[in-house]
Length: 107
Image 1: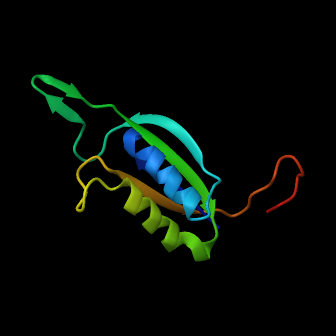
Image 2: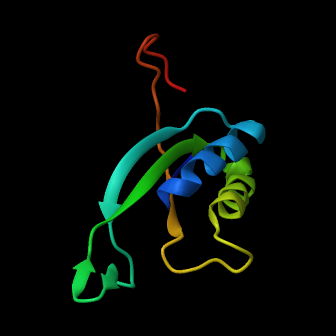
């Protein structure tokens, strides 16, 4: 299993959530976060905004679904055809174990 953490623009979050749902992956955790990427924030005149609002979507998937889910997120989160700075990032990490709290069963 893998944990995918996708950090996306807030306005793209609904499109990503819908794309994942339509692709058969309804279980997603969403958090509002703040941060900056390589561009170090956004400068408007003399003011620099170095903590920009983003949404972090977390989803645990089977290894066989990884590439499909990554492509689904990329397609829904990218701005325009080529994308642009600030569109976000996807992090993929292995999950060793998971448990359902209500039943106590290992998944």
